[in-house]
Amino acid sequence: MSTDEPRTVYIVGAGPGDPRLITLAGAEALQTADVVLHDRLIAPALLKLAENAELIDVGKTPGAPSISQQQINALMIEHSRGGRRVVRLKGGDPFVFGRGGEEASALAAAGIPMQLVPGLSSALAAAAAVGIAVTDRRAASAVTVVTGSEGDGEAPPISWDAVAAVGGTIVLMMGWRNFDEIVVRLTEAGLSPTTPAAAIEQAWTGSQRAVFAPLGELRGQAGEMSPPVTVVIGETARLATPEVSWTIPGRRILVTRPRAQMPPLVERLRAFNAEVIELPTIEIKPVDPAPIDAAVGRLAAGSYDIVCLTSVNGVQALWEALRRNELDARIFSAAQVAAIGSETARALEERGITPDLVPETFTSQALANELTGRDLRGRPVLLARAARGNPLLAERLRKAGADVEDLALYDVVTPSADREALRELESGLDVVTLTSPSTADGLAKLVRGRVDLDSLQVVCIGPVTAEAAARLGFPVVGVAQCHTISGLAEAVGRYLSSLPPAEPESADSP
Image (cartoon, rainbow, N blue to C red; front, top):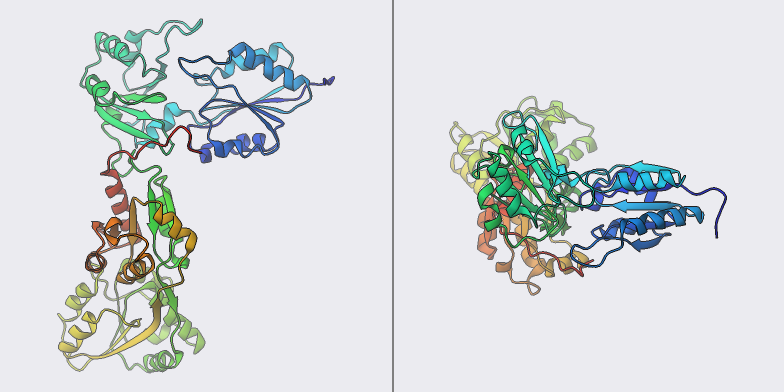
């Protein structure tokens, strides 16, 4: 069937691998396509966007029979003239070593209307995946992107002398099969074999891995890699940011915080391009409000010299009691306020209270050390926290002579098991995050009998949590240096960065 007016052909860049890195314009084109002519390595998740389209694989396989460029051009023209909205979906950016220009010229010559939708090129994105900025004023003010497939078709030959002479960063694409020869050409042109370099395989996919080595040693250390491999050569490879690691994309991380408190940590971990599984192992439950209301009344009457708050949950529960009793932050005017942790302090500051004391180490032990350095004899102290909290702080304050009221603001219980998350856990994890002793205890209760506790590598927010996890039988592989959510995420990144590459996904994986 033909029409008088051919339909528009969209030449779309899919980005470097991760389906989330396609542009909005590219995604919209796929959603309205009638037919999609796609390359070999396109992520299946992107093809699912074209739910009403015919999918035609026109990818070229190195060393194997493949559809020719002329045939691809003919298919685009045929379907356009048949009245179908065509998307030509190409990896990376079609116009950076992607033959997008050739295909656009063929369409123009045939009188076919077209829309060009660039994509994020792996020339830059592969380097970013391992923390390399291809330009950095400390090392490189220029970047040269060059193909290693010299002499392909009518392409002009490459002047490797000129490439070496430019300086800055060299990004080599499609050159892994010829890499040994390219290294010889570059070193003959004056580039030192000790120049820092990195080879990145399958960038921005679950099979991503990379090797950093001097240029002359890179093939020897990364010889098992198979295309697509992007090579970055230059001093910028030496400056790769350590918290971004080629081992992290595709890693599986379990988060155990209460459901309502998960988003900040989950967001930080997903920034590593990791897969995050959410399994709340504790749930915050209210307690009898009468004792809380009575304590709030005494606080309003100025009965306490010191008020200690140990968590964000405690601050929230106390402020609910203030609202319930039609009171506000002014009731703290006669008391000094102590807080464990920067997040607890921030929660107080958001409510108009600047804590008088926040220990540098965010633990009950550290707060006890700070407070017992003062004369506490006979001084009334309100310790407002979770029921069944660590007894250490109250015991030390009482031993120092303080009159301590240990007030339960909320309770922590183990929730019902999230069966889907447990199934994910059973299929394997790389690391588990624990934010408190209670999350460790809750996890042990939920998974006991399903997996061995000593098979779950845990990273903890602080030493108290780490001690609790170790007592339960979890292997503690990392402890946050700063006992905050940001510090915990950094500790997870450091641990995952120390691991060898994950096993590549099989070619048949979805």
